[in-house]
Length: 467
Ligand SMILES: *[C@@H]1O[C@H](CO)[C@@H](O)[C@H](O)[C@H]1NC(C)=O
Ligand SMILES: *[C@@H]1O[C@H](CO)[C@@H](O)[C@H](O)[C@H]1NC(C)=O
Image (cartoon, rainbow, N blue to C red):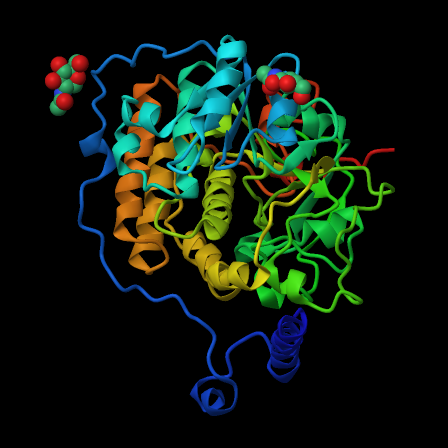
């Protein structure tokens, strides 16, 4: 029964590893095509000529009235299953509210009962309730799709949340959820990972292997040829590593978020289930173009990063959170904000999946993750003081023009950004944030005793190492 799958997986892994052995990373040119095929290369296949954000946001409209008053901290989950332990844990977490987003398949009864029993802290958005939401995004969101979750994010933001715990119904919290991404990052005493050549564009960083001791593992969304690649960055001690963290991925124990190739691979070589070794208890913050895929299974977003929550709607759910994460990392970098990976905060008791079906839906990750990041690298740099909304829009336009998302996703991102404006969210401005001088400007502003960042030497000096 399991045999054909194993064979297939072994073959897939062999293909992956042997093609790496046979061929250096760069293309050898047309002459290699006959023997080795060709890498997917992003090409400009369309030019976006539709409306731009300035044309679609009505800046004189007053914010929509609040639908509900959420706690400062709010979990958001979408599910088609009955209330799970993961959902009830967040529902019961002290100081936390919970927004559950249903879909057409979700049985409303148990969730309506949950919300009725705790109306101050639990909101349930049934399919019917979603149709009456006053957001442009509501009618543009496909049914039976992970992107339904976007309506829950909007609802939580609209209701006044300051931190959102973006989680899945099968990721069970190990303890109380951290108060915010920033606080959780600080508490993890993180190291800082920045590539050696930050001007060379983004470089993939495998946080599982490089920072958390899972040497054989890699996160879903890491391009296949980065699995065995050299570490893009060495994580180093840095006293200001936790500065400006606004998104934080909690790792999952037991059944971590790995891709279908890992799941289909030989179990003797690739353990599953596994826990991250507890000896690797410090977080890691990514900077200067270090990129690691992150998911929508157990991730904290602080208000300065709420714009980054949007899940694209034209790709499969197993791809949507990863593409979202790459857009987020590109724009976070332009905004001088940062992403952290934190030690395990959840146990994943994974819902039933067909690994081969997952493999089919994950193919864009294996084949095009690198292309997505390169295309995003190519988006024209934005000036400090520029608009985060415009940077997000530009990112989706570039992905569309390279055939990596559908045209609908440009309009969808515009609706999202207009909705954020309509619910009264203030977006941060872009600002300069130099690699390897983490928080130089902001830290200097906070602590005037530090040397002025206006002197080049001070701005480029490596901050003193901890201890
Ligand atoms: C913008 O909002 C204002 C105030 O609600 C309204 O009067 C105006 O008609 C809106 N403009 C457009 C183009 O929708
Ligand atoms: C809290 O947990 C209990 C026990 O699991 C459950 O019955 C209840 O519905 C939960 N409440 C919320 C608001 O999640």
